[in-house]
Length: 143
Image (cartoon, rainbow, N blue to C red; front, side):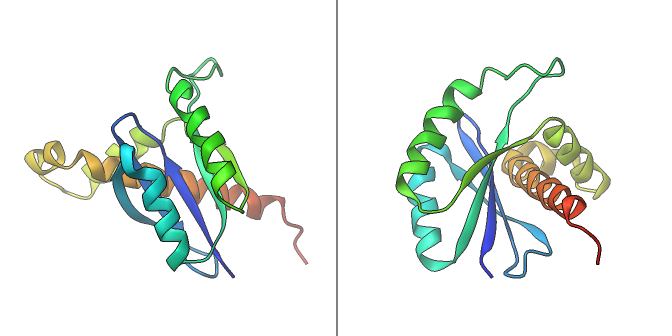
């Protein structure tokens, strides 16, 4: 089985997460400078089998798309032309808040939290992927 990869796309930095090969567990992969994101993804997919890419869909509380969508949509359109796997959106509302809360609850010191904004992006991607996986499990019939 191949991995599922999740993207928390940002203007400067982009958080990435992947599943294990059995698609049971979501884990943070890394945070990449958005300028080199496509190169990173293509290189990663040469080394690891990926069957699907999930991109965080930025929505506001009123269900309207956020301003970041003007950057995400061209990226997704380009990515779809370059890879042979489905690329789909998944709602990313509250993932940054949940990521910050997880870091805070982990006991990381305040100064370390300030200096490690990349970690929030990576954890946000992991949360997007975990929620995506859970939503798919909920739709499967129980035998």
